[in-house]
Length: 324
Image (cartoon, rainbow, N blue to C red; front, side, top):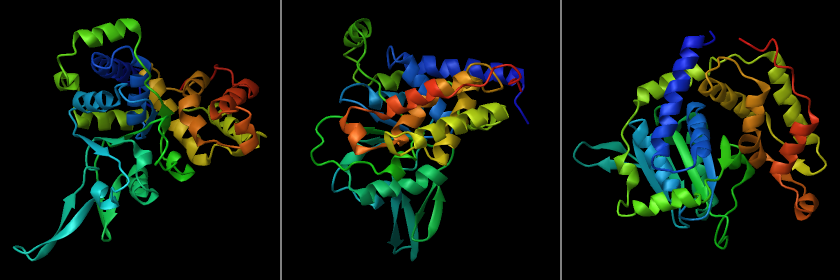
């Protein structure tokens, strides 16, 4: 059943309050915050490629505080083990039974800091939980609950000692973007409050995690016309057929942008998806899923450029008759 216009209006108002609440701490980055909440409300995960000191931790903590959820931070290092992420089963001599001790992955928002510094084995510990919302330890599944979101970071510099994220793991991230440095005015405001080292501690909750789960379910009911679905399929096919790519956007990627477009449309007060919603999300949702041909990459072609060309070449459907 498609959400009503009244529900869409409530969704938009609540979404704007969430963004504004985090925006009081992460200054001048409303667009990135909106993308982050869109990822959360699409039950997706976010990859931030940024230099140190741009507010990644503040973003994760502030989002968790805004939805009254738990937040954990995992510092990925070469010696980090999978059990350090997921948890471990230990034998309790008093009860003479094995007990599962939860790892830091059990939270509403998990900050995986410098994820590419851990070994591929440890990185793979995230694959199941990011896809299915659970971890399996000693054959026993353990659900992490809803909402659940991983915000992972990687440093674009100092690549020595890092492990490039495999395509299978990149595909698990709904979006990839960057926060970037604040503008001059925002920097001055940050410096004026420098005595408050942890500004996210001042963030007050706006909604509960139960409300967020309801918003996730509501966003999923936004109407997507068959013409828009065909447009998404055509865009992803264009990236696969490009001479600049070895591997284009997968079907999982097409499903991801459809899911995200529903939440994005609802955040704009609509109960139906427009082609412009798809275009707005194409770069952060699709570009990181593209594997470039080595020669094209050497020539300076990027995944963003491939997506940009697909948007330019593939005609979008007319917006008439797309209302749910």
